[in-house]
Image (tube, rainbow, N blue to C red):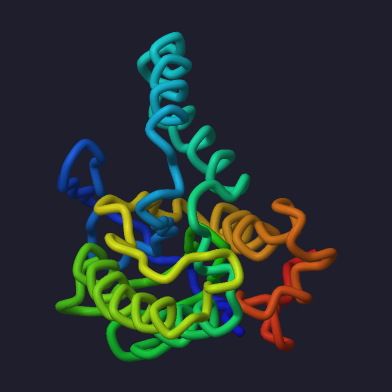
Length: 217
């Protein structure tokens, strides 16, 4: 479990890139909260409704409102939700942790039925976009194989193509308080979505199996 006594790395000269309609922050030493989701987890009609709501929000608040609405949608489990199946969720969690301590430091995560949360610090030569792309690439192949083998046959799903939405959401961590708020948000997400009574009861997260952080009093 991670608990640093040193000041958290803070970006001194923000850099932004765009891989579509979403801007992404990339700066060495910045801890990032990343959310990526399955391709069918935000239906077109729901997305259209969200866009209508966002147009009525002041320009400075639209980014935050878009994120809030999308997270609300993801927690309601639209689409195939193949990450709900234990073998699929376990495989996704294993992929998140595979290069932990090599390509990135992974501080918190949660594999939800339709999406994934990760709080990480990229290491040298591994920008965030490259890390997320590798997670998606390896997990897509694994998920397709598991689904074709019948792991989702109980709900009549035998193929998932494409697996992931091409974009992802990221927020850099501003300070120590923001870090701990984000850890709490990620680990409590299964409780908020009514998938578990307690964060530690959800086995596909950093809170599961005795891995939960000790929060400052």
